[in-house]
Image 1 (spheres, rainbow, N blue to C red):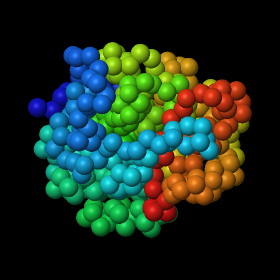
Image 2 (image 1 turned 60 degrees about the vertical axis):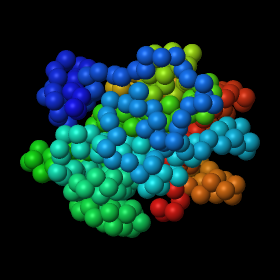
Image 3 (image 1 turned 90 degrees about the horizontal axis):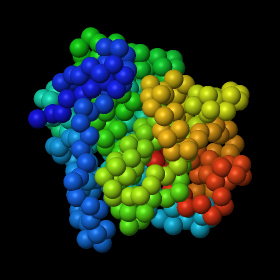
Image 4 (image 1 turned 135 degrees about the horizontal axis):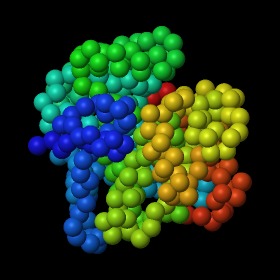
Length: 359
């Protein structure tokens, strides 16, 4: 049976709804935690990929392509560990949320899902909807990259191209949802998606023998991975499987940096069209992102186009063939160290979130 949802702001509960009547994002009413101590990491059975952590998941597995257990690689050039999230079935970390979101859709008996996306989330939802036998409509910017549009179309989903800003795309999608045209499989709103991205933290901790890094640096647009990491590391800590929380450090694109602007009261108006995947001016999870930063002594900064482009070239030269938005997090790692936010020898994990094959 599908778990109920609740509003952390006003307390209302629902069997299912895309957001609370008060306008606040919803959460699962119950948060599952294992009732045992952390298992021996060398004996942990991870053959089910991210679903190996079912004790932490509020959704049962119904739709899967074997996703998860992405490599964690020591990288001397950055004095960090990179988690290679671009090796998922559709080439991005968004598969973490797609497998749990479509599994919940199946639990609820959904016939059609809708999503709005600049590319990666749309491709992931379309692919997992195809695996589930569920129809999908994906609202995308008219300027969406051809490679991502092909991924949506070839999965049998219907792309709906919308002229104008990224917000115009979301508005058009929400109009369809409110008209009853489908179930909102949103990577920004749907709590099942965040339950999936939380598995990033479970895998990272397992691969490090339940040792938590000093910090995790992630791209930050809607906060899909940033908040997933927060929820995952919090669950591990609350379950007693780890003994601390990492600092969560976000990397935003200049011109689209509302969190960095609020924290530092600085002008980040510039432009950054390289990191197009995180061009979000009004993240719906803004309050939750700020709470996660406060709770972990974290931070968020904005990166300009040239710094990200240079970092992308550096990544490619040493064998990490990632898409442009990926480079914002390693670039931010350098900046955090230059500013003294992180010591040079801090133990840091950085996810590389999307494949260069999707450019």
